[in-house]
Amino acid sequence: MRSNRENPFTPGFGAMPPYLAGRESAQDKIATILTSVAKGNAKHGDLVIIGPRGTGKTALLQWAAASANRKKGVFFRRKKPRIVLALPKTLKREEDVFGLFLNRKSFTIDSIETGVRGARANWAATGISLNDLFQRTAEHCRRHPTIVLIDEAHKLSPECCGLLLETTQSVRLLQGALLLILAGTPGLFDVLVRSRATFHERGDKICLELLSPEAAADAIRIPLAADGIAIGEDQLGRIVADSQCYPYFLQAWGKALWAVAKKHDSSSIRDEQIINASTEAGTIRQGLYENRRDQWQGEDRRFLVELAKIVRTQKTFDREALEEAVGTILARQQRGEAHVTAMMEKLVATDFLWKPWGSRRYIPGIPSLVSYVIEAEHESGPMIEGVREPFIVGEYAW
Ligand SMILES: Nc1ncnc2c1ncn2[C@@H]1O[C@H](COP(=O)(O)OP(=O)(O)OP(=O)(O)O)[C@@H](O)[C@H]1O
Ligand SMILES: [Mg+2]
Image (cartoon, rainbow, N blue to C red; front, side):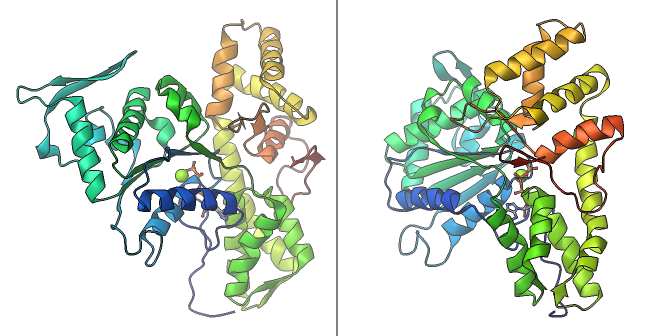
């Protein structure tokens, strides 16, 4: 292997992976919208990227930013775009929304109220209207096509989210070149619904599920090969199965394998190196599992274990079936119907289960976490020692 290279794998830093695997259709969708913005075409909507934690939302946002900035890319020989990256903590008040586009000194608002009929501004004495703000933002976006990327968007308040969507829509109607990309966990669906911006339904959605086995193999093999490290199909197959095709675990495996190869100055990965690397990959994974399990304590934990058992044996889970399972367990715990909604919300908020846009089925964020929750409670089974042989039910490895 080549010396003096840093380990290219990046488990968990929200950093671009050395090879962004299996997201071609998402990348195509983003590229199409960026082209539309570059051409000054106002016909596109905003884009929402949703996926459980660790599935690659931040990586995809970074890819979008890099692709908009690329030399000789879609904006080549056109107006250079302005790229604004923001986190919800900088968007606490609705007034902050306009701060994304305009110099704060150029407008004064006492406050903005969002109600059933949409947003309304309460003006300072110098008062400009909300329409003025849209006009100014549109003017600005005609001069500089603007792409706003908001990560962790599930933490936005519904009011700010609604005003953001109303602003981007109004600005585009005024021929401003503006694109908003929101990325968040499945809780973002709820924020969008509560924002009352009904047109979000018509916007483009990208739902990030686990990678396909082929893409998962590429995520490991391609960066290793770039550093002169070969890995056989059998060994790769074991790692892919063990990782559950979850991008974060793949990066953990890649990092550990690369480190072992470097230590032994080896140019190929053999079985004993997989065993060595499994200790580090396993520690990273155990950290994630325990952190997720800690979010459930006391009777909620006991609830989760019972639900995990049902999830693991049942192949499809539509909303009614899930509500029924949740209700049955709660009744056994002598907790009333009133808890059903809260529990359904908690299952989604903790990424235990989620429902991709347009699907009727709830699926686990990480299937192996479901098994872990059961095994950890009963201290049975292999837990996650060594390389785990997955237990296949339906199309998922548990
Ligand atoms: N398509 C991919 N191929 C390979 N690795 C990936 C891919 N997408 C993401 N990763 C890697 O997986 C890890 C998690 O990705 P990322 O941080 O983007 O996830 P996230 O969805 O933003 O998670 P969170 O919700 O916790 O912020 C990172 O190490 C990232 O480099
Ligand atoms: Mg992220």
